Image (cartoon, rainbow, N blue to C red; front, top):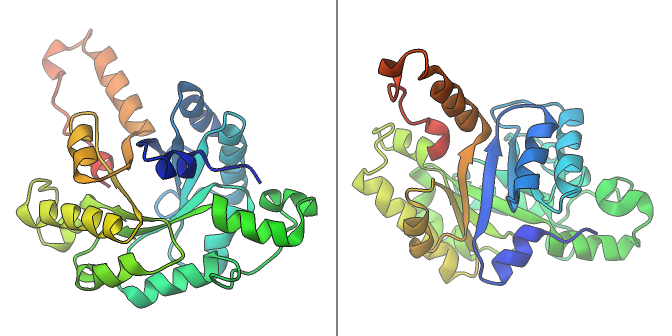
Length: 267
């Protein structure tokens, strides 16, 4: 099984770069991979890409040794395991609200002896049955990562217990929905949000998990200093939007800088 570039860097104590994609064309993922990103984040929670598009993103990234992270929708176990069977390198489950939900994710995404993920082995991640059955189970548990997204105030009450749970790799703090959850949408410097972001990183590191979040070039070092090793620093649509705005400055210089910072940088 192809080794995870993300896990290799995280386990070595290095920082992982990630770019979120909203556009469906796999060539966007390929461009990000060619430029050198460690990971590309595809989204099925909000974007709704079909499985053939997701498969194209897998091929586009793996041919350049870049990992593909898929944020799955909250659904059945099939929604969680199909991206892995397509050979996505990791999945992220949004809106983990309590310890029991976290336990269920581990149960359906990890093979024995950690969980009871449904077994096929006849898909891309098992080399279409060319990989030895038992070796497939071992390698999938070791080389495919599972992320639990903390983006609501409710799970903070059980954060230490969630962080201590065995069988997953990373806690990922999402400030966008968290800001809404505390009644202060878009206030990225709100004291409760800042405190929660620090708390998630501390809990992850305390229990041997990795910490991930979103940010940008301006606060990247601050997040690294806070303990975050995985940072998604932007999105394809942000770059394209900014490029279009820059081009239009030649026609209307007065319009420069009117657009607000995209919420996608804080998702």
